[in-house]
Length: 138
Image 1 (cartoon, one colour):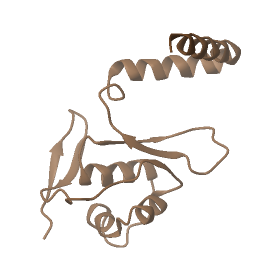
Image 2: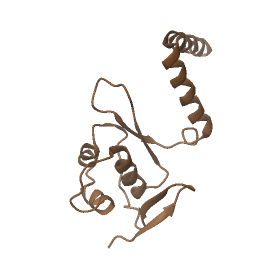
Image 3: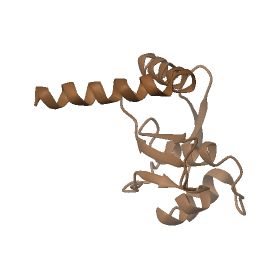
Image 4: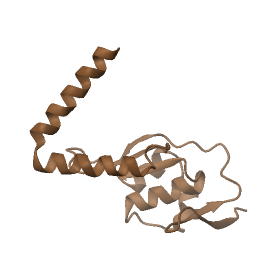
């Protein structure tokens, strides 16, 4: 029997987790089209039923996938939606690290969004410059 409980992850978010920690369950990092694809690719049908309820339906994919990931191992995975892709695999699952969970990372994302929206050419030039300098350091 799986014992469920809520864990306070931050002052704003509660996460459904399990005391058995679904030992040995590995989640493949990568991009997915929907909750259905994520669950099928990682063979998490039973976990999804436990977290989302029996006969669940995909609704808010990012939230549902994050709930499943947090159930398996809280604070290990981060799930994000990537806007503007030509392909439908616009949900990314990757490892959480201390940088991506920091306010600096959030600030940098906001900065890049602003620059891309208002002057895409300067953003591209800055990327080329940074790549060139980084290559010279090697």
